[in-house]
Every structure is written in structure tokens, then in C-alpha cells.
Image 1 (cartoon, rainbow, N blue to C red):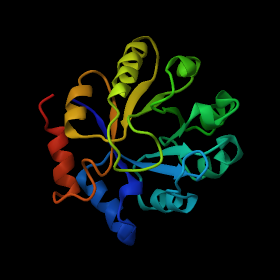
Image 2: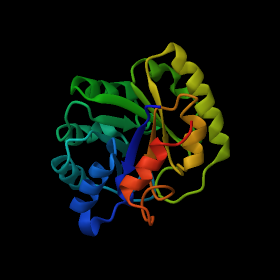
Image 3: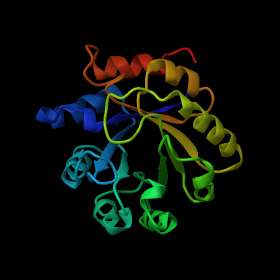
Image 4: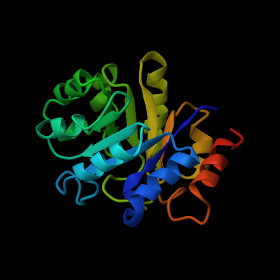
Length: 220
């Protein structure tokens, strides 16, 4: 089964970021997930524009840029100017007055437009945006911090989106508390990709290559 595996780079070891990127590349990661936080939309600061620029220089793999910021329209040009075709930008619709305008900037830059949906955000409230985005990132934890517990009620969002995608042109992605059992359950149902953090990939005894190989060889 062809699934996409993305490394949540806020969980990487920043004392050796070059080595982290190269080991993930060699291990077979598909893309690098970049969590940008402003301390306002979420109560944390994570990666910065400088981190994005650094990782963009270190790899030719796609970047998935997740903007957890208030009113991304005000700063999005800073991010998209450092990205290239094949990269993705996700915004949170409730963080913007007119999310479609911000998403159009992403489209005009030749990048892949996406939205991120919080556990407390209803699918109904973002349904009109599904016709203009290519990716929907479903948060299975509240945004802002790594190493959180999976919120079981989010399953309903995945189920609803997987039904909607049968008649629309977008893919569904998993972000937060992503364990092997979740991949095994939801990849066959149609979830296209999974953001891997401390639950499965980082801080483990197994190498990145071993972990990624084991995921891809699971019996779906």
C-alpha cells in the first residue's frame, strides 16, 4: 500500500539537525513536516522561518509547512517565498478571516494548498473549502505540543472526511499521536499520509530506517 510518511521535525534533535535530516532521508522518509507556531494561535513556540530555510537547503524532499499562527495572510509570503513546487502549506481556517484568500496565495505560488482541522473544529464549518484544497490534515490531538494523548472522538472526523473525499479531489492526512495501530487501521480506509513524531519515530532505539521499513511492511 502506497502511504506517505512525514517526519515531524519539531521532534528532531536540533543539536545535530543536518544528521537528522540525512538519516531520515536515507531511512526513506517521504517529506518533512514543519510546525510553525506563533505563541498566539497556540500557547507554544516551535519551529521558525530559519528552521524552514535550513531544512529546505538540506533536502530535496517535499516540505509540509503547518502554519499554527493567527492571520497567516499577514506572514504567508515569508514562508511561500522559501518553498518550491511540490511543497505544501496548511492553514487553520478559524485562524483567518478569509481563509480562501490565503489559500489562493498558496495556489498562485505553485504550492499545494491544505487546511488543518483541530479536534474541536467541525467538518461542516470547513466543507466549502474542500473544493479548493488538495490536502486535509486532521489533528488527532490539540495543536501546539508533541507527545499528547490521542483523542478518540476525532475518529468521527476521519470517517466523515473519507466519505467526502470519494466525491472531491483532496487527500486526508493524520497528525498527532500517530502509532502503528492507527496506521494499520486507517491506511486501508483511505488516509493518505501520516505525520510521525515521538509516538513512533523520534527518541526510539530503532533507527529511522528500521522504523520506516517496519511501517511499510505492515500487513494492511
